[in-house]
Each structure stands twice: as C-alpha cells, then as structure tokens.
Image (cartoon, rainbow, N blue to C red; front, side):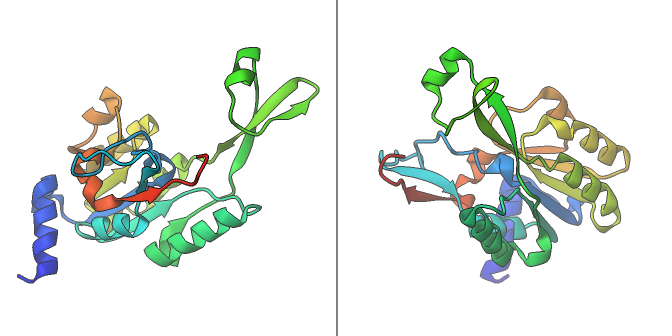
Length: 222
C-alpha cells in the first residue's frame, strides 16, 4: 500500500466510513461551511491562535480531503458578478475543484430596515429610502439545486456526503434513505434532531479541522 492509499484508508477509518458506504458523492454547501470556524480561537492542535490571526477554510485542503473518500465532489456557492473579488474567488474555486464541479449563481441582496437599537450596533454599510435606514443582506441558498442534483444523480452513487448544517435538507435525506441510499453529514455547530435522525453518520467539523483549515493573518482593523 503506497502513502496515498494509506492516507485514504486512515481517514476512512477515522471517519468510520466503511466499504458498506459504496460509491460516495460529496456536496459542499460552502455558504454554510465558510462560517464553521469563524469564532474559533484554537487551531487543530488546540493551540491558541494569535489575536491578529484567524482560521480560514483551505479550499485545496477541502478538495484533497473530500477526494480521500469520494468518487465525485461538487461545490455550491453564490457569487456577485459586480464585485471583482467575488468573480476571482469563483475562478479560483473552479481551478481547485474543476470547472464542471463548481455551481454558482448571482447573489441577491435583501433590504433589511434597521430599528433604532440596530442602527447603533450595525457594522454594515447603510442606505436610506422612504421607509428609513436599511442594510443589504446577501442571500443565495442552494437547497433546491443541491436537492435536485442529489436526486437526479442517484444512479451514480450509494452514499451522499453533505457538508452542511442546514435543517432544510431533512426532506432530502429522508427521501434518499427511503430510496436505499445512505447519508453522511459533515456539520459545524449544532444541528436539529430531525437532521441527525435522517443520517447514517454525523461527522463534527472540529474533528477534521486539521485537514480543511489554515491560519491567516487578519488585515488591520478587521
């Protein structure tokens, strides 16, 4: 067994992914995953990180980790075609995951009018209209797209691995299991009981932190 195969087997054993799970399709709900370690102040070895550092998802690490047990990996995330940084980010993701494995759509911005107490604590750029002061909240969920793809591709996999903590996937998981598919959930933070009860296996993101994160210096003022 070469080093690559040894690592694959090691990670599968660590996650308790046995041969019974068969062919695995992984779907990454990056709008959810991107915030998993936002509040963490310790690295994967439980060492405190500096005040001017933060944990960030490593896209290459996420891809390499997923490839250890997946036959196919699909990445879902919104973009803003009017922002250069967003366009460049999606271009980079496509280089990492493959152009045909990254699925994106235009982010929509929802107006949220601020109450008096919210104006004081708000850190977003504000706007004004006839109803008062508001902020623009980005919204770009992929629940429908991921659910449709999961069902459309059912003949190509035996187990779905979902990177998300979104309770909206309960109905999808229930349908897949009723169709003799298995579901593995990789989640950050708390999840609903219904979500947990409709999976074969739940993996806590904290347990895979060393594979999918890196430490990044924060810009001054962030």
